[in-house]
Length: 306
Image 1: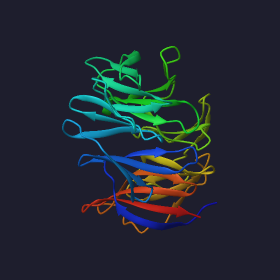
Image 2 (image 1 turned 30 degrees about the horizontal axis):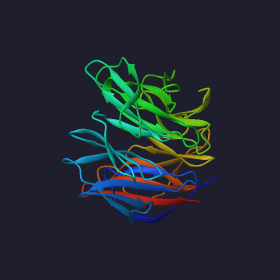
Image 3 (image 1 turned 120 degrees about the vertical axis):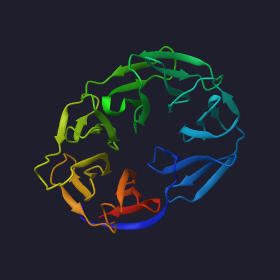
Image 4 (image 1 turned 90 degrees about the vertical axis):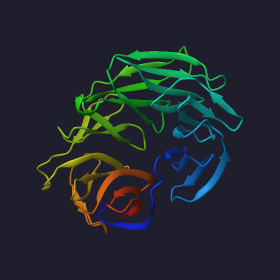
């Protein structure tokens, strides 16, 4: 069992940067600033840049390992590749790469559109309509399969979870997943066969579900460890056998792969009014980025578990 966490580095957080993970598990980040797309390694060091001139401010929505990047601007969605720049004309709140194609999520007055974008022309190759009001989309990539998960959150009104797959008009499909209304995916197991789901409203305990069957494999027992304020709606796998959770204003919690045997992990962070954890992100085996808030700044602390 893992019991200790060693801090490897602490750095200023890359606010707005998007994560890219290759087939070997190496994590990098992509951001757009000052007229350049910029690539960073997992420790925040800039490794590459590409000049890109867009009409006004832009936000990176998604990137792939081949150097393609989807960006949101006031003029709609742009797709930048090594070969050039495509303008889609579609306004999107989230995007993800499915093979060579781009899938986007776009809110409308009383519904939500999930569209597949042809990466060679920027045209819409296929679209599906989801009847959900006033929702914001978030894509969660699957580490091994050609699919992504789409969360459509509606704030205090809960949300829905969907599976999106197919990178051409003939195979494109969007399927609603039968989970609790407020459940979202915190992380996907490195093998891709399990989902860590948490309740965005704090109304139920974290669960581990088999994928694709969604059979429950584990549930966190709130009586197994004393938690004054409960668990936050974040978490990640540390390796194939351990999961990290955050006890609000308390401590980082490690469990086994079934969310059992919880134990606190000592970190050089004074939780409470002076510090909080806003995110947990697995980098490589047993290395995790902890996104920390303090009144002075937002930082990223990289730790290695042993």
